[in-house]
Image (cartoon, rainbow, N blue to C red; front, side, top):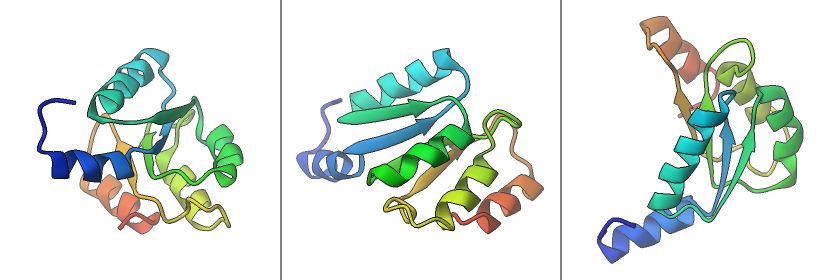
Length: 116
């Protein structure tokens, strides 16, 4: 980790204990995984589409979820709605959405899909 203050590093370590990464592009997923590891991520599970991630998510308590929004293969809105309405132990975990273009309607859709 980058010469961080120990208190900040401790907080990040707790949040980055078990990360779920949903990204269709394998090269971009590798880059995101490397960045998360540099910040202190211990274990990262990568899935290429939101449906597969929804099937696998209930089994583990992910501490952070990073989801790409590239419809149709990686629909962050459908993933979040499905996860928040499921009985998965990680349904209340923070979700970070990555989108190639942000519009006001997309921001509203993201908020309405279950992010806080």
